[in-house]
Amino acid sequence: MGDALDLTILGGANQARKGRKEAARARKIQAKSKKLQAGRQAIEQIRQAQIARADVSQQAESTGVGGSSAVQGALGSIQSQAGGNIAFAQTLSTLAQQANARMESSAKAFGKAQDSQAVTGLATTYFGGT
Image 1 (cartoon, helix red, strand yellow):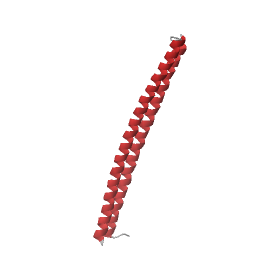
Image 2 (cartoon, helix red, strand yellow):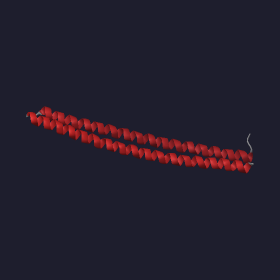
Image 3 (cartoon, helix red, strand yellow):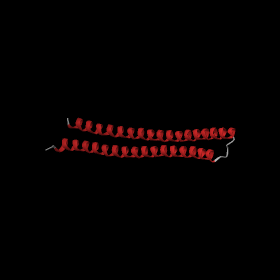
């Protein structure tokens, strides 16, 4: 009876370890996906800024105010907004990576606790509990 229980406890600990490894792989893939998504958003933000700058420049030239300080201010504002949006997206990506690292650390600690419980279960089986 003890051998079957031992195998059950060890098998459960092994399955828990496999589950943790798979969860870690999934989190890494998810983090990579979020990083790629943030990069894509940055590229889209740059593209939108380029379109907006071209629109402002075209309208300014067609009305004869192409070199005015108002147009230069508008173009600078567009560039500044795009830079701020990209910085914000990068900050979110960094925070997501930090959260992922904390989740990974938490999962490892939880796994160690599960392994300790399995060892305790085996010790209790062999040496008896009080």
